[in-house]
Image 1 (spheres, chains in turn purple, yellow):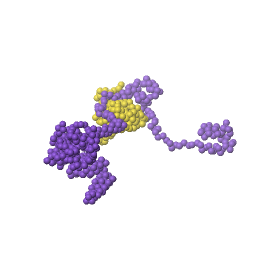
Image 2 (cartoon, rainbow over the protein chains, first blue to last red):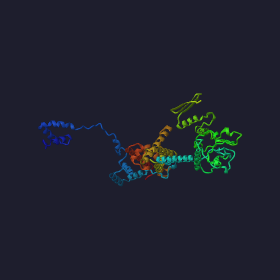
Image 3 (cartoon, rainbow over the protein chains, first blue to last red):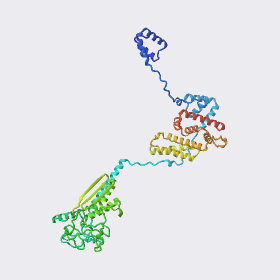
Length: 385
Length: 160
């Protein structure tokens, strides 16, 4: 029974539609008797939300299972096909079994339906299955690839370092020095057309070991030559083309301790007459064939060629030029570059940038401009009179 | 999908696809081309295809290729493919040949769903995915196709 202690429950039940007609009537009577609660009643009315009928599920048809009418089948046919397809419930299966037990015609229909089931001819196979298959590509992991690259770089660096080290022990001048003794020093001489006898081969000396300053004190000369001798084998054959064997001969004489210098045959050239040699970088001459100096080799008077150790700058320049030509591929005489031009061109090739070289010479001033990519270098030099 | 899974799919499904395509278009060389095309498509999209769904993917591809072929051939002939007339019972040596022939006389969609159902034992849902039909529609087509086949077999009095 509604009273002032439980009227809120009655209000909620009314709002949710759970009150019967009698209960609703009792509620209305209660509200008439207690007008002070009418305000509270009116406030509760808005709680109920009206249903939004705009929401409609539009796939009902997809969810519906077709009936026998939809399938345009009789009930029996529907059961028979359903049994064939495994769609029947237990109740429908029982119903079908009852019908089958009473109807021979239905049994015949069932056999015909069972005959409609297609059976694949399993012997029929795709003729070229292997053509469809793909070979699996083995991917090398990136880490392994990096390790391989690092190992390769190290190997190359090692080979390069070893070659460089070996090159320091290679020989340059091929010298057959005439057994002419100067007052102080022996000058090695090249004799290309005549292979030296083995007993004549005494010692091989590298270009790197040529002292930078020509005029040194006697004690300095002794210490330097001794240092050289410690590094070099006592006798070494020079690995050069057979027609131009290269050896350095150091005479057995008392001048053995003295530094060898270049001698122009047939007359020995005294030390003071030679131009002052400059330091030569040994590795620039590594594995290079003997440089042909046209002026000297074409001389009919002398059968031997002389390596121009007295002109190391030219020698280095020629070798460098030859190497750079290989890089810049400017072998043709029409595009022959000067050494500075070739060096700039090589830098341009390596850095993949445009280069330019300009050299102007006036009686008073020499001006050189080099451009490599964005960078420009210029040098102005006064000519000394 | 990995290359190995792809090759496994070739081993597992190429024969079934070939039979399905051959039944559809009655041309073995064309069926072979269609299967090859389907596997080429699979290889091109192997990164996007889940191996568990590869069978449905392949049958969908073959089904679409067969339908395309039918549509092109209809366009070329300029007429609807005329249903074959029912032959005399004594022209066929056994029930299988009759059934195969009658299958060709069924409407296209009924033929497809029955082939998929009987040859590959696909569920209604799987057939629905392959043929872009709802499960209910698949069921309707299968039931109607069975009924049509039964009627034709009844006429021939082959099954008694």
